[in-house]
Length: 239
Image 1 (cartoon, rainbow, N blue to C red):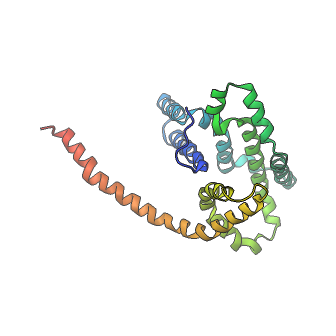
Image 2: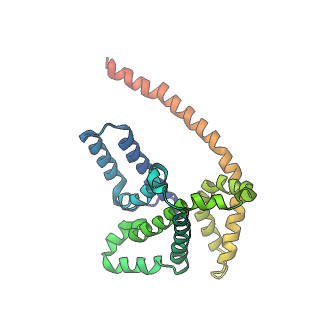
């Protein structure tokens, strides 16, 4: 419910929101319907905070794409319209810098304290529009992709997808690094350098996930064996 940014990688803030989205989704799916489920989902929502709840609809759009088959039942021309329309809306938002006037309008409409606490959700309504455009584009792409010779770029597409998480983690610190010594008119060079470093560091970073998983699993097993089990035995036998 307050805006805190630890360390310097500002992009990582969205992982905190996604964590609670998966918690709420899992509680809703695996608990029986009733007041208990409603209470724990509400509790998870309160822990997620106002920013998480304001941006939750964008995440739910992706859930709908995956879990609601009825929205995929329409003619091919509708798919084409969704694919192209979503792409056009995304391009309009990016090329016209629509976020700048939206942020300025919100800054003038609320108090400075409230504007600060809204943080990344300060223009949530525009995020909803952008998210809807992305969802529409992806929905239409399912059919449009079958008309394209995507097998020709399958290898490069798979490689790019394989380093996408590394790109998510690295891009913000790298852009700040280049901005520290590049002139303001060299943004293209900063982007090129960022992509080059991601291309070099991305594959080994992605491969390291297995090692991190084994390390964290071993650490948790040690905690269970030496700390939690001892604490449980003390509770059973305080003497």
